[in-house]
Amino acid sequence: MSEERNQRKTRVGVVTSDKMDKTICVAVERKTQHPMYKRVVRQTKKYKAHDEKNVCNEGDQVRIMETRPQSKGKRWRVIDIIRKAK
Image (cartoon, rainbow, N blue to C red; front, side, top):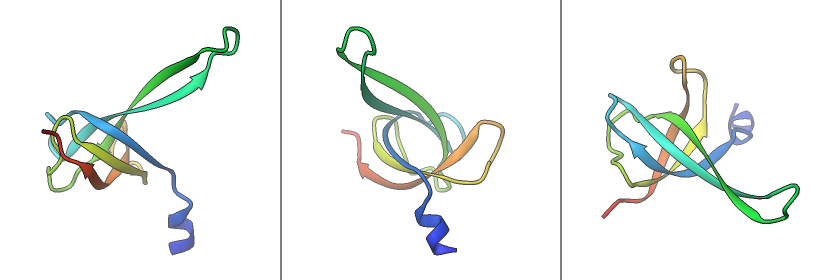
């Protein structure tokens, strides 16, 4: 069981919304090279993550882990808060 748990994907991102109950919206940014122009471009993807205790606030940097589906659009959960917002 624990070996399977370690295989799960993790992402680090910034909380963009904490208006929902027990749910946050996390923006994860990655940098890729443009296929034609070879310039490094930033790509952002938003994930909905489960925040059981409602401790995350907007602007916090958090680590999220893939989990079983919690709802229609929520398949991630918060592991820990890396940095609190000022």
